Image (cartoon, rainbow, N blue to C red; front, side, top):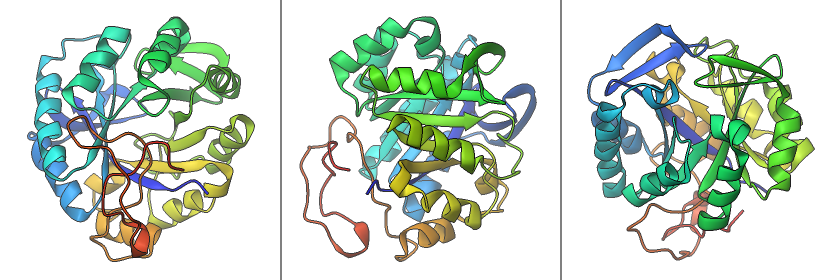
Length: 288
């Protein structure tokens, strides 16, 4: 059965940690000026993955400060032997390669999978399906691109099916209408997408409670592989330690089981499994 992983979100804009409502850059809340400190806080709670988004890159804006913040986050993650999933403005094979070289474990491709699908093919061929993730963002079932600012007539399920046929393994699905509003995740759409495609789907958008996490985790058997949590953590509506406990059934400090490639610079090799889903070494990226 697919393991279920919790990904705290660190959204970067002009080098600061922010959250947007429904992806609207004019509806922004700043939560921290030091992204590395935020990363450390989440990792000290026991998670093994962080989901980092370069919003400036997604909007096609200058993103030097966000790149510097990513470097700082990666240093913190390396000290915890943790993993970073990174997206936002990744629209060329060169940008994917640069992120992986920095130490990112998985790169999320969004707009480019619609506008230049050959880049996805090239990335999958070069780096494999455990280091390349598709980000499918939709409102009312229709895909949105360019930092969610541009609509399309493409159905999310049709795009995801096409991606699976290209050899994709991982997909982040965001219901744009719910993102940042804490109205509850779109469980039914997430599950339907996983069932229709056979992909490992990470849910994003709308999480507000521990019960939301449990509802998503209950569909591991359908291919729901994790959840990204943002505003609910930053505003204290969900305690990260309690969330880990709710999902893992282990102590609050126990890291969640993870799937995917380890950060560069960390030796690959599978340790013996320990009680509570922990492993004594990095997890084989093919596992799960």
